[in-house]
Length: 237
Image (cartoon, rainbow, N blue to C red; front, side, top):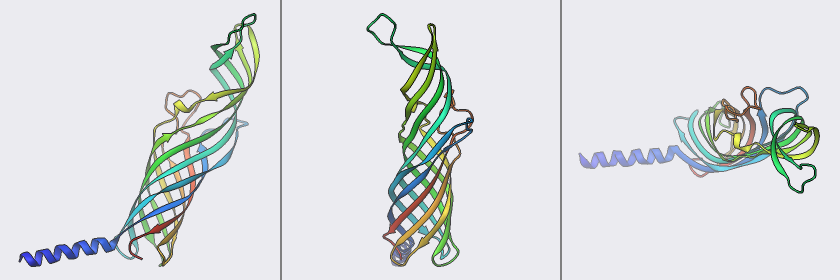
């Protein structure tokens, strides 16, 4: 009896190993955070990278469950009109040799970039319609490793002595980024007989990239990005 149970246990391990595959993936991302836009605002899609690992469990010939963990960059640039009531301005008082930071009102144009680096974990279902082609769908969860929203502003500041011009004043709003992000991912995939998977995915955040306390972002600003990746799987062909 014990020998039979041992044989069944070893067979179950072999089956599980045959159904489980692991691998590595590399790729590119392009997109931008999207939300309510001020009139006159423009932007350009950024280009970032992806690198990480994956594991997939084969339930049957058509369906697989997947778990991935990877590093990803989400980049873009923007140019937008800005009206800021509490603007940090480096002021040079007349008749002195000193510079002091004061809080002023600003009206003008802000040119900057998003360059945010995340650790991202999607939990996925993969459904194959043919031997080669399938679709992918599931949620993802991200943790912000390094956030950068910075640039320069040009316009006018209003202080007690009147209105003064500002040109290429550096700003950094990175402290207003949310550390956690989550959303949904969906896409298409193509597999080969040599352990390669090629995928095109769209990821859409369900949470704003900015904290609720950030006064300059109205509404939800979501991460919307495309991913183009190639993965090599070490397990079952």
